[in-house]
Image (cartoon, rainbow, N blue to C red):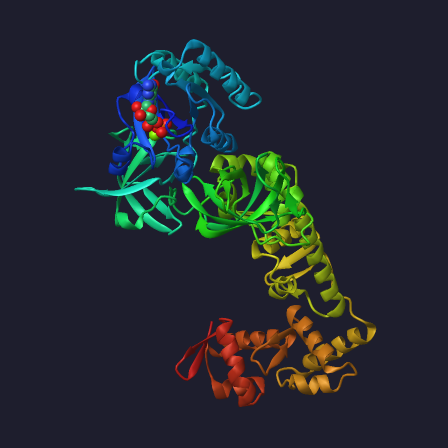
Length: 636
Ligand SMILES: Nc1nc2c(ncn2[C@@H]2O[C@H](COP(=O)(O)OP(=O)(O)O)[C@@H](O)[C@H]2O)c(=O)[nH]1
Ligand SMILES: [Mg+2]
């Protein structure tokens, strides 16, 4: 589905009673206060929503409460704002929640906005001019420096046209959100609708959603089916990013669904209670100590976080640092997500920042590389990030983990992987699914494999090679099977090693026998050669040698591998020549006497006892020299 409309979320901000809700009504015709209590008390408690179409832009307007007690509701609405509508009443100018809301929007990374100087009908032009100057002063150096300041009156309607124009201009500059990314909708309301069942609403911050999609509910992990979708109050095929969106869900009670939960693409992400972040403190905040407890708000979720700094012991006002947050509840957050922290008590906004690693671990004192790693996550290109992540993943990094930690799309992962493997910094040890390991680690594993094989061959000079399974086991569990396989394959391709069947050896290596071993080997062979078909047992032969049993058994193995000796049963071994002679004898017999031979005749012909005759005939059957037919053999 495509639409030519651009979808933009406008969020109000400002002190209580400064005319935010009245302004939204004047702009859209909808009064955003929807709760009975709000209507009765005349104040906004929770989020309200209204829509406006203007100059080819669909505005979804989120009206937030200004009262300090409801800042956490304001926060739930502030996530996903494209354009800020900062409201300052001309008769009161800047007040505490003007500052707090503005700080929050700045910390949340809102990039543009418009200032409405409301209630302009209540002041004379001198006062209006004064408020304008105060506002300009207040906004200097911020993302709203130079933004349009529009005097308006919801009562007389003056300035509304100019304000709509200013909003359209800001909307034109706002970048359209990319909807090829994974779907994510932080839930800000959940309710039941007669005849439909559970409905959730939120600002669609990424990807798209449509009827029949499967979605995952975080943090519960449930997979749900989408029944239908509305955006801007109308049923649509797919809702796209930057739209106020309502999703009708099948298979769940609305009472289970709560603000703070998130709907997301299924099977991609993990909920978390540990995140590594960039944390910034406001100038107005007190210094923050190691281990401080704060209120944490990200998207529409609110929980409590314990703060640990990497390196430092405390954070000064107006300062910024990497930090590890331990959250009281499991949440879904992804890299780049903005968050706000509020002081535990009294509850005021003291700072915020951005998520760097959503699946962080408990901070370790001796992780000196941590800060550098976080700096790369914060500043680095995708290749740099992936390269560093791979360096730190001693077990290797699988495709699913890359998605869960970065939320990169297939294309983005593919590009970064391509660049890194091309440069040799990263090795792809499996392609389906992709498993990466750092080039350095891969070299280490290759080196270890070579060493292990060399050591094995030195210690087992009579062995033809090291069993592949022993080699794999010798590397320990910290080397994953894919890495072992790829490294071994490469060593074979580079002609460092030979791998035949289950055995691995140095390329071109031959078994080098000591003089006494060579002599013993000859003796063994001679013993069997001279015995003809009436062979001695292996034990008897070996007992006569000067080499100890372990080594002489290896010599028998070598002779068997060379096919000079042939094993007929576990007990019986014959010399190659004796068996060749036997076959000749049988073919001569066939010419002279016909192709049938009985066991007694066979014994007579070869001059051997039953002990040898039966195993030999069975061997000849296996070799397809003879074929059993009742009590007789047919010579083939
Ligand atoms: N005279 C005048 N009163 C206004 C204007 N806008 C809002 N008000 C009044 O100011 C009070 C607070 O407005 P409201 O929109 O609820 O403020 P909010 O708390 O910022 O949402 C209400 O009594 C409104 O009628 C305006 O432009 N002119
Ligand atoms: Mg209001």
